[in-house]
Amino acid sequence: MAEGDQPSPDDDIASLSYMAQQHYRNGRLQRAREACQRILEKEQRADAILLLGMIAHEQKAFETAAQHYEDFLRLEPEHARAHYYHGLSLIQLGQAEAAVEHLQKSISLDPGNRTAHIQLGDACTRLGRWEEASGAYCQALALQPDDLGTTVKLGNVYLAGQFFADAAEIYERTLELLPDNAVLHRHLGAVLHRMGQTRKAIDCLERAIELRPDYAKARIDLALVYRQLERTVEAMHQIQEAIHYMPDDVDAHISLALTMRQEGRMAYAARHLSQLLAIQPVCGAAYYHLSMIRPPLDLIPRIRRLLDDPALPEDDAIYCHFALGNVLDTHTASDLAFDHYRLANTLKRRSLVYDPRDNTRVFEKLIETYSKGFFERKRGLGCDSDLPVFIVGLPRSGTTLVEQILASHGSIHGAGELESFAGVNHAIAHRFRSIRPAPDCMSLIDQETVDEFSARYLEELRLRSRTAARVVDKLPGNFVRIGLIKTLFPNAHVVHCSRNALDTCVSLYFHYFQALTCSFDLRELGQYYLDYRHLMDHWEALFPDRIFEVRYEELVNDPERISRALVDYLDLPWDERCLEFYKNTRAVMSPSNIQVRHPVYKVSVDRWKRYEKHLGPLIEVLDTAKGGSVIQ
Image (tube, rainbow, N blue to C red; front, side):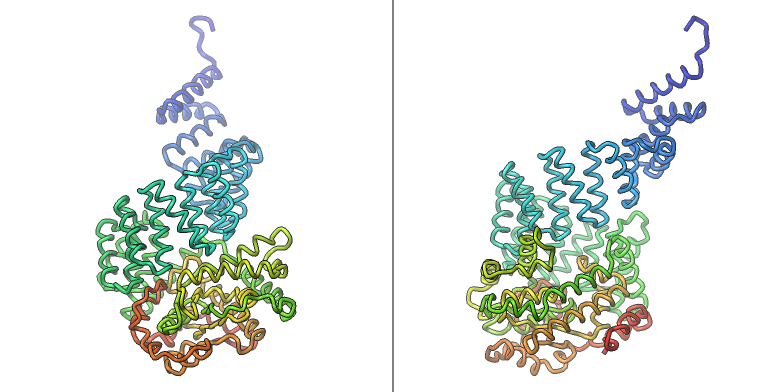
């Protein structure tokens, strides 16, 4: 350019563009933004719009960033990096569904972007789309196999999707490369625990702690295993050590309070939760667990102040609404209580991917698979042990009370809610999945399979008691596995706890059962109840007189008659201690561990009537049952 000549507009824009990029790279974001704005005053340049988006992104102004990315993509729709950044901004805005679309588009344009695969996996994880998430993480690991963080994420997704064997394989394979990695040992231990392989789980968690004594999360996981084994002294030690290393860890403090409650030390548990709230006042989980033990009215203004804060995290808000419902319910403010229960459930439901029709299809498939013909073909295969007793049904139907009655018998051990049989179910399905999907693959069960997995399960029971004549597994959800139970253990005793349909559903709606995805909408809950009754009718038709039904209302009205009949069903002599079950000091983990410390009372019968005017959607669904309404 000759001396004295004025720069052309193009030269000016090129210079501004260069300046904007330099300012951005050197962290001078405000000056970079000013340069971009000067460019856009002269010309709609796509690169300036993209840079404005990236600047807003770094400044955590995600809404602004997203708008700039959208403007840019209208001009250049095939730009991989812009789709990637837009996906990240949408994740930050809680719009995971939209983020998935942009991340998928970015990957289609640039499949070698490993972080895009990881972010896609993260977005799908938020949506509960476990198979898509695992596929994305697998693609990322194909690009960098030694990525420990993504390996852990993949294992966690397998765990969340209940692909336990896949998760275990991932961790075991990575441990061959990194044998002294405490994180991998901890996560493998957690998976093995869910698979019902308790000894191996303890070994892994202890190894994690040996490698890293300050690994608080591993200690909390080990404490959970000990709690389920009723080794509460060892559990308390691990939790206290975790708190020593991480004094502000909320999970550790909650675990300590739950262990105290499990032991029946309610006042200590409540005091510890109050102390936690003194140092962590924004902790919805602490308010919820405190409301389950001792719900004083002075909790109400404290929780309401939290809920008035728009910055309160959603999960804390869910806990707080459940807590307010509990306090108000205890003080018979039924309408206000229901308002908060409804808000809690609505908040939780909108974060879930759940279609009740999927559950209906699963139950129908179980009925189709475990037919009369199936058991005729499998006759003679099963283990002849009569050690296992399965208490099944829906949660909140009296399962804890029935177990406490039985566990007070001198020849019966109550093992609580074990994951062991669910783990057996998953392991068998995993073994045969390459041939047939579950549950069709159960037709491939042979004598070798029966011998292996019945022995595994019996070993888990004997870990709980070496001398008992009967060991009770009180996982209510085993009602879906009665077909496999009777395949492996034809002589197993199955006790089905039932309760008035409305009382059962209302109680489920009022409790925060995070894993029970059907329980956060009244219509969906009603449909799940109908599906459950339909499946139970199938089992009872297949095994007449071999499943003992305990109706909660009959039990609380005449506890001695029902308890005697129950013990007789188990082929054991009567033990008077069964009538004084509330004196039994055994540790109880379920939410009903307060009630079973007291004699039978009837206040929970027909509790639904206090809330009848709010239950229209639930009643409408329950009235559609084949053969007439299930409402008693």
